Image (cartoon, rainbow, N blue to C red):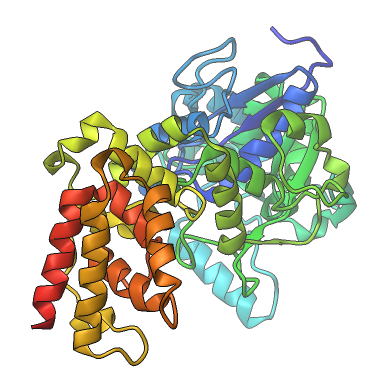
Length: 487
């Protein structure tokens, strides 16, 4: 059990979709706050929205957090002292506390159906009033309530908002924010199906799980005064609140499933590295106040502070994320990078040479400085495994005619043929080919046709690097194919 003053944070996503990139940022900040203080980071699933539940989403949340290195101390799949950590398994608890609020006069039963509520809303809109419940059921006598309950009439439990109150939220990011109770609605706490709304469940769970810091995005700030009132009604200690800025698209609209690629699983599949993702997300809302941009998890644990979290929304910039990912790819040991790249190479089953590793390792080494995302390696290096069809016009360097192209390729073929197998390296090929190219008006006259013949690409690595990886036999075969295509 945690001590009274111990820092405990939680990440409480809904399994109504896969782990969101913004959710991972929220989880990261909560993790850093807890671990900086040698506290606990808790995972809880808020699965009370049955209509939007997505099968497999919970497992994606577990794996996504673990992929990112955000290892939670308690959670649905690992247990803990305050289990269960899934809200749908805690319904009796919420009902008990909803009934307690009714008994204390802080909540009441509401029997209004959807039609009644919609008519009420339309009437308020017509009068240019803020839509809110008009407390129609609040005035019911206890006798009428008992009759309706005994008859099994569908009902919800609504929170009673006090009049004339100013509720202050002392937010660790946004400072003091005040709300007038007249602006708040009598929020539904327990739905007719026995499931709680977010507002009741989050307060009950955070209290029972001894959460010291409630961390979430700013869209939940307007709900916080209701939560503070619930803490007061129950007589519980109010936790500290920190509302983080939203992550925005480049046009400053909210980043969502409808406006951008937000599912973490997609980034993992494309070959983004956890170190890069964590480093980038840390800066989406926080700045250390220095020019330093590269931070390991250990460094973030030392430097991160809520005082330097921004209030304004953070713009998601895929180019910056790619820059971070490219940086971490460049730093990775070649053996490890090779293993991670193999799944992205074309037709993995049909190339037995991959099991030997030498050719693949050379390919990865050649691309390591250029890669920004692991999945790019398949597109960049497909020509090593099969020469793509290409227009013979691509072989032409500047004003070369067909005979000049043939002569250039024949010269390259002779150089490759006469290079001993023991010296068939990019260094030796570079030395020999460049020496010969220096005798020409421009080195492109020798190197361009050769590079295109070997790769079939307009843009590719130097011909020496390609030839070494292809080997002498395959290189000569491709040159012959190019010569033949000229006619």
